[in-house]
Length: 553
Image 1 (tube, one colour):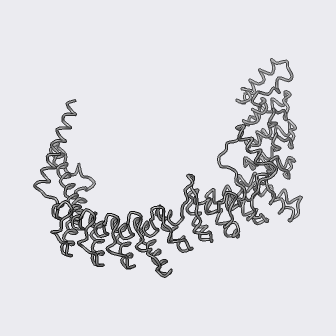
Image 2 (cartoon, one colour; image 1 turned 60 degrees about the vertical axis):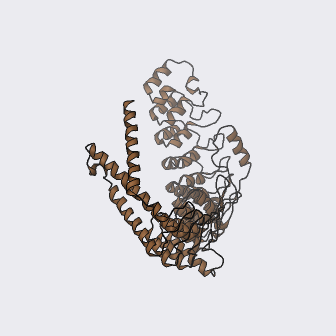
């Protein structure tokens, strides 16, 4: 057997010349292989020929009843196949324990030349195995359109147009048809040819003849691995969507699968749910544009239910969000923390989505408090957009008459949120819209205090940066060596913005004498060169001593 695996005719000859037992050549291993099967599976035609000439039987098999011809066909070893058929007179219709022939093995492997050789040698193309699978289904699943055309041409020789259509629409015991198998693999040309010949594209798969029981037994015995549980009720569109095959989905949509578009399988999944669950965004877009329900909820692997529009906004997929809104998605959805679609879009700076949401709300009569709907923390869309500095979103919300002075649970306003992070343009818009510049939060802090504190943080960063540069210089490094990313200029620009923001608030009437709950006024939050610089210097010296002590250790 080892000689057969290596294709060594000389070794085979030497062994057989010294063996008197005529049955020796046909011995089968415990794993089900004979020398002939091994040689054929590896395509060693000379070894196959020598074994046949010395008494090897072409159709000798183990318990599985898989022949040498089946192995050669599955691997596409044409010369070995010819030798087995012509010299070994292999039985073309011999079936293994699951009812498959060499032709089905070649079809399952997508071996076109092997398929042609077998059919031209007399193999029957019109049969099915014990799972109800025929060669056409196996080829469609592999996506070999050339082989599929060949098989269909053979079938046309013995079947009328109506009979061929019926044959194409046969179902395996799993419930799948040839076009479903093609769709599942995204094999467009195979699917198109089958559709042209009358394949039923809206057919629903239903297992039969004990398929599930057989499958469970095979899983229990370790013969197959359970990846995804079998689900009845799927259509060609379902399986194409599950596989994320966009072109295949478009072909089916163009062919007219309106009923499949809204059909739920036995697990209550629509094609859209399968596309979204598989993270196939482009497929999901195509389905919604074709008429799939944009309000379809889906449940993830952890059992959590999701809203398509909210999730599209969450992952910042603006195009999909726009399509969902256009097709009628519920814009008033909010999550378990009362975060609305508008709040989420504003927080993420999706200006076009915010614009569309506001337009849709206006078209609905501007009912309710959608624009100012707050989360459970009291945050509104304006607060979220202001905090992140999304100027475009802020403008849209102001134009939509949002409450400029709305407060969160800590009484923080949008003006405070924008001031804290130095968003000059946003502060300008909010002030122009009438924001109360002297509002105080629960700690008594005003927008000016937040602005000074932000400026303080940037100036502190600037001082630390300068200390770093000076230390590098003392170590012989140039400023360019330690700041190749222009960190210094970036900090300076930020400091300029924060300083301008403080000035803007003061000019807009910010009261510098207001005290917070601890008695501090706004200027107390500013950077104080003498005291703050000395503190930073002490920190730097302490850090240096710490580093030196580490070096000593």
